[in-house]
Amino acid sequence: EIVLTQSPATLSLSPGERATLSCRASQSITSYLAWYQQKPGQAPRLLIYDASNRAAGIPARFSGSGSGTDFTLTISSLEPEDFALYLCLQRSGWPHTFGGGTKVEMK
Amino acid sequence: QVQLQESGPGLVKPSETLSLTCTVSGGSISGYYWSWIRQSPGKGLEWIGYVHYTGSTDFNPSLRSRVTISRDTSKNQFSLKLNSVTAADTALYYCARSGDESRGYLDYWGQGALVTVSS
Image (cartoon, rainbow over all chains, first blue to last red; front, top):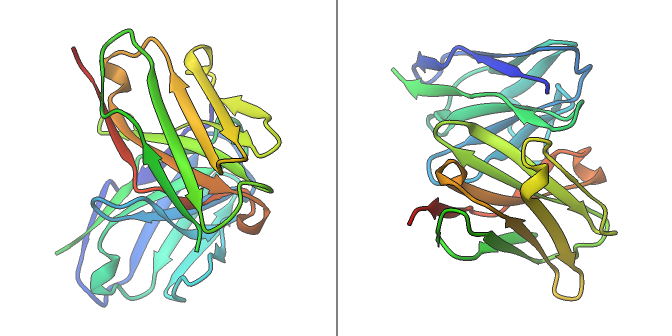
């Protein structure tokens, strides 16, 4: 099973700041990685697929990069509604697996 | 707009079978993969398995011996059965869709159904 490790566990930032989140895979997953945003009491929302493609309706301040084993989600300038839990998901190997998440909290 | 809604008992006794149904509205089951995912504080998000609209399935090896996922195209529903449950199966269970449009990633999710395993 492919293990995804997200870091940091928590990121404390202020609105307007840049957020950089990491997801590392235990083996190469080429570009088969997605990023999700989850708010309390809600299901995850797809932000980025295939490492760097924004899903429909996702603002341009969200961007993804990486390939192989190291991936990054960048939020260029945090809006108040961006404070949430962020999860990565790989679909390179079965079972598809999720990372443990990074919580972006307001400083 | 596609919507998914989970339904089923919120409390299941240990050793019994957990049964959930996901009803899809605003679109057809045809052409997509339909999955069950669960989320618990201890284990995070775990993909349980999926059923393709054709009826083919695959399951997480960690749960394969206890899981059945099926679909009913006439009712636009798909279902999860997990037998011999223990407290470790207590979780929020989501149903979700994936397909070519989302490059195989889960794009539409239900709101989740909390299932507690307890006597």
